Image 1 (cartoon, helix red, strand yellow):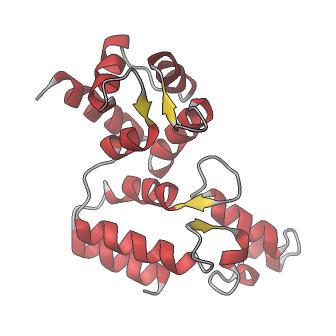
Image 2 (tube, one colour):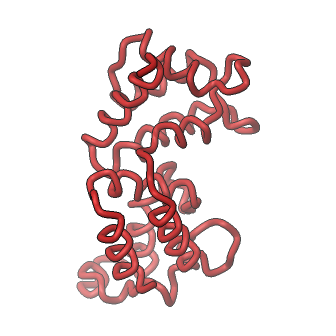
Length: 188
């Protein structure tokens, strides 16, 4: 196995040890540092993001990952390409059911899930904190979205949704079980 591949597998393993929040947290730290227009990072930004997220890798390992993901060999790491390389491999069946669940949530079809999209899809009134009067329905929706929303902007992208489920997917061996679980959870 090539050094860059070994390094990214090591980082993936560290992310997965933190559960579904592992990749999501790393993505949040890197997104903050990424150039807004190009959604890319230079090596120093990548190293800082890893450090800020609490991932201790040798500098050489981080450089190997950076080189592996710098497809254009232009000294920048495309954020999306990095996340695709970091995610555990998933079958098309898993990706498809995740996409269907996202589409079900994205009522407006704009590629983002917001609290408005959740109305009529997610039963906020059934939440214990809503029932007790502690939270409004909007707070219930926001809390739900926060589990997927890596940058905490109140909007969940398809990429954030996929990142969340890639962490869960890694712990489930059977495609059939994973697909059935998502179909049941999202009533697909």
